[in-house]
Image (tube, rainbow, N blue to C red; front, side):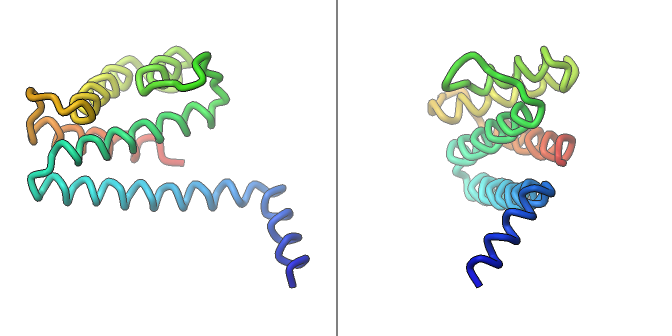
Length: 138
């Protein structure tokens, strides 16, 4: 039984099916995290919502960079590093670059508990993250 399972996993990996499955699982995880962020925002916890959306955004950009085989020079790349490299590699245009830059700024404000951040900012971030996830879904 175990050998049959291992053989099926090996065949799936060689045919690229595991990557598709991984993408499906990540898409579901992103959806769940965005839903959690929406709930937190609705409950008035906009800082927590913004921090969660920032994590979703960073992970999506990281995966996008990986899928385009972009090698970042820093071992611990930041959201801004991913954004810059994706733009420089023409994965997306200047409008998307600027949009991601704005989303990252809101996420950073949330992560650093900025007094200037508002629920409206995080709501805009939520919309932008959803738009980005839809635009760059596989």
